[in-house]
Amino acid sequence: MTDKEFEFQYALGTLSYDDLLKIASRSLSKYILTTLSKDEDRDVRKWVALNPYTPINVLIELSYDKNWIVRYWLADNPLLPKEVLIRLSRDSRISARQIHRIKRYPKV
Image 1 (cartoon, helix red, strand yellow):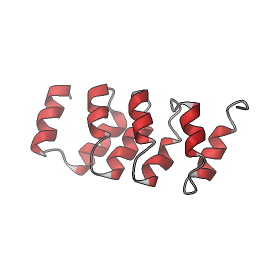
Image 2 (cartoon, helix red, strand yellow):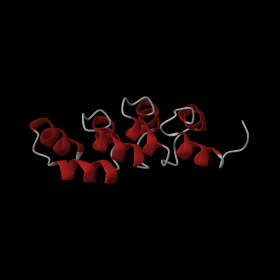
Image 3 (cartoon, one colour):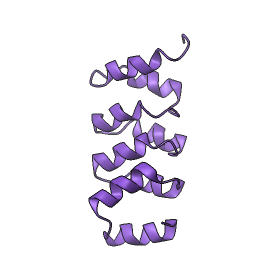
Image 4 (cartoon, one colour):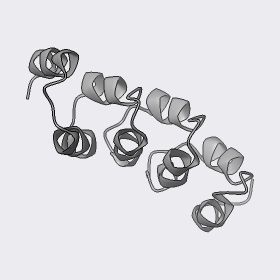
């Protein structure tokens, strides 16, 4: 799906929930991933957070997501900057997962 096709279908609301999840998890397009990172559904944002092609600036924005589940799954993205991961490790809802990932990094 091209960016234009996505933009058109997304604006019309013709993409199903399953389509959105699939696109969020598999897309290589920075435009599509950036757009879906602002979707109202937390599961769509979660899959954007997990997608290894999501731009770093979008990952950083998602680290402030209002929904802790998005932040929780964000820790599994290997491109997440170390500083963001350390900050997220202080979140009581997600700290166990974050601490596991932080151990992969050398001492700060």
